[in-house]
Structures are given as C-alpha cells and as structure tokens.
Length: 141
Image (cartoon, rainbow, N blue to C red; front, top):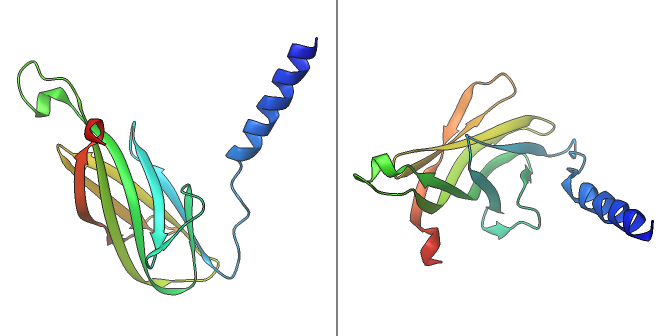
C-alpha cells in the first residue's frame, strides 16, 4: 500500500511539471509546436537565456528568438543501407511586431539535413521564418 501511495505522489509531482504557466496579458505568448517526431526548445530572447525551454513569452515589439531543434535525418536521405542520423540545430527568428496579449505558434521541421521554423499568428498567417545558425550530429555532443 505504501508503494502505491508513493507512486501516486511521485506521478502527481511529475504531472505538475508538465503544466504550462498562465500567459501574461502584457506580453506575447509563443507556443512551440514541433513537426512530427522532433524536439524544439526555446533558448533565449534577445540574447538572454530562458528558464523554461517549453515556450517563449516576450515583451511587445521587436524580438530575436533563439531556439534548439533536434530531429533525425532519414537513412534514405543519406545513402543506401544508412541508418538515421540525429541532428542538433540552432535557429534564430527575428520578428518586429509582437503584440501584448497575442498568441503565436512556432512550428519546426526539417527537409533532409536542413531544419526550418516558421512563426504563425492566431489566424494561422505566416509572419516570419527562422534562419539556421548551425547544426551538428547529436552523437558527437
């Protein structure tokens, strides 16, 4: 019985860590939405590192968002009999019209070895595209 109670307690703590904070209405909220089986993380806003890599919350105006995007290149894109290749990429997105209280969505994906990320508004209109800052093989890090 103690094991069950302990397991329930630990699982409830883990569940709390998955909750997102409530958006601040004086800032813009940027949700991260990876494409397929990937990992997209928020790193910094205007060069200042973030405490939580699950989202961006920024002051209105012009901002630079730095993110990390991890994905796998399919073996078919590399060569015959090749296995998948893990990639770890840094991307930067600049946008000059973030609005207080607005919600945005940052979507990421990859074409072969190249990553991409796009910023959309609440109406799903494309606002900006990220630029790649460099990639590497996850196995080497």
